[in-house]
Image (tube, rainbow, N blue to C red):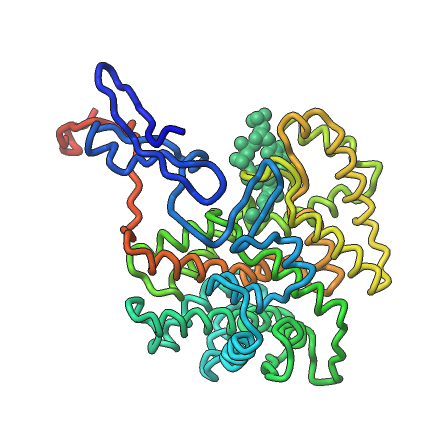
Length: 426
Ligand code: CMC
């Protein structure tokens, strides 16, 4: 096995070290390449570029494998809990019983928001998209929790991480309740993370809220499935924002903004809207033809990394069936989704391009059945992904080789020219 690559430009050759990970592709280290050769490498969508070293999440897209700290996502989703996965991502290991008790208590006792923070929501229009509220509100946390903004202090980094994981459900639930014109619900310390969140979203003063264990488990599993996903667009945004030394509340707000896009976290909302637009099974062939004619994309299908089944989609589909069965819902859109999946998976257009259902294909139907409006789907994704973002942010800060992120470019604009006064311009 060679430990270097050689790149030849004209009559000069450059040796580039090859670095090995614990699994997955080796990487060609081009860090000194520009200094040695006066050339940049060019990779706008990062399709061949590793932007950092990480020990958190591993994906083998061809094999459909997703591991968090080595543990397969299927095992975590079936056997673990979201808070346990949070500990795993953040600290590197599954917690012992004592560690878990302490961690759970720490998160639980940070769920409340500063009372003045509640007035902040009133500044938004009631019909504001809850992701707009999330972006603003999470950024504003820094104005309320200024005692944990020193990024060079590991204790403050830890407190900020716990605050973010703990307060996201409270903020997300308030964004939802505000949009519905309902009063805010205070978190309860005796409830689990996911149960607490559901209660804060759906409880009203007029009647007692009754927990449903199947829905609580489904919510927890959906959070696990979205907890982290390697160096995706929003995580890379968080890392890039953090590379300047920005505090975590600002970085996570940047991540939320990036997640909002329809190619990323916004796809679950778009996937459900697509199913609604198709409406009935009879309309599928015409819709698929439109995809093949490149008029629009099949939302909830395809992935930059997975060129095989998205392992999260398998668990999501199972969760979808469980939730609909528990609630006794016979959703016609589920039939449309199942038939659409079948048609797409047997069509050469999708087979040749290795397009399979991703996590978003079934998450919309599930969340809608649980009572969430479409606008909340990406908010739930943001809530769950916060632990991934903050774990990656923390890892970056602990890396002694951390440098401010500063990509270069292939410049194709005008070369140097002289300024011409306006009366002399042709
Ligand atoms: N429907 C139809 N055609 C598609 C789709 C799709 N969903 N996705 C990719 N293609 C085609 C694309 O047009 C291209 O065809 P051609 O070779 O003829 O030009 C080919 O497949 C390769 O696509 P690409 O654009 O190079 O793939 P990418 O890796 O840049 O894009 C993606 C990945 C997720 C942005 C894209 O598959 C997509 O837009 N999917 C729909 C949105 C979606 O479901 N996003 C959720 C991703 S999972 C949640 C998350 O992690 O955020």
